Length: 176
Image (cartoon, rainbow, N blue to C red; front, side, top):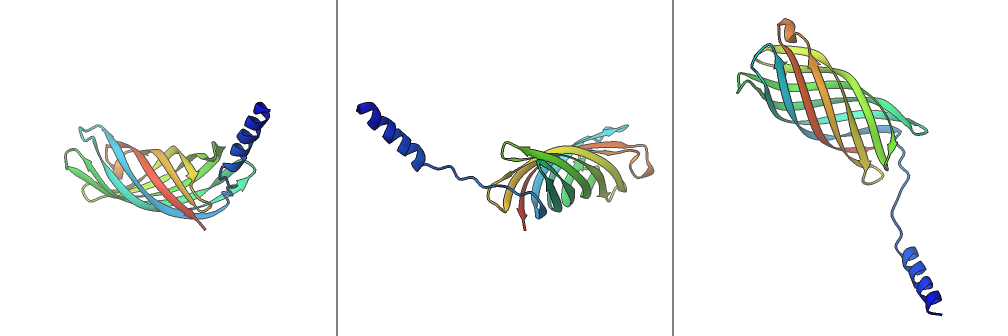
């Protein structure tokens, strides 16, 4: 009789502690804010650097089974300091395609696209980027995420500098 009572109590305890879950639909528009850091490498000059960035982003996803794809645009105000203050980068704008799948309750994705950078010292230029990210839903309309991107600017602004920038970002987004 003791075993039956223990099983009944244990079974009740498991039933009485439900786990909150919800089905995530990734289709639709989203927007959010991001904060990040960078590591900058310049080929052909001793001008390596780093710095923080703060920005906004917006995009649209389409879900087809476990495949999620879409596009995103983002804008960052940057405090990139290259060569101990010799060069500053004021902002970056990115246009990205994203493709991913549901993994561990969230969205794991790869991304690629184009990037534009503005610098008062060495001018403005565009390059390309690729990377990966992960978004995890906190509520039905809010996700927390992280993204790592590799940017490449070949012969920046027509000069001899090849610039590589790695960024790591923390992101919060809201779907609507």
